[in-house]
Length: 72
Image (tube, rainbow, N blue to C red; front, side):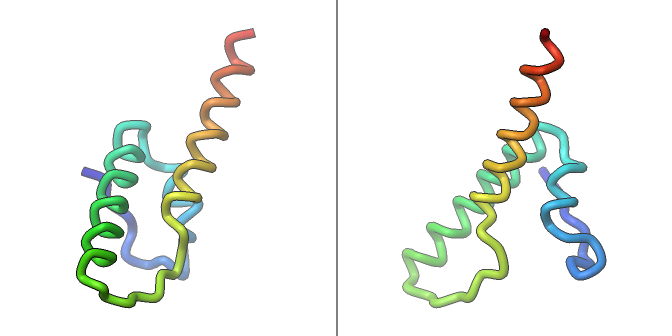
């Protein structure tokens, strides 16, 4: 299970995602999706600080591009 640091102001989420391994990053994505559905299903209006899915997808794209360049 992925663990994020508890001080988001001193270490932005984007930087925290970079420190996660691939499996941890995918675990975090899965957990974020579950929470999003849970909150949406209960009609709870919660202001999100970040679009977790977009940040995770961006990090996965960066990693994919790096792997593509490394294979040449």
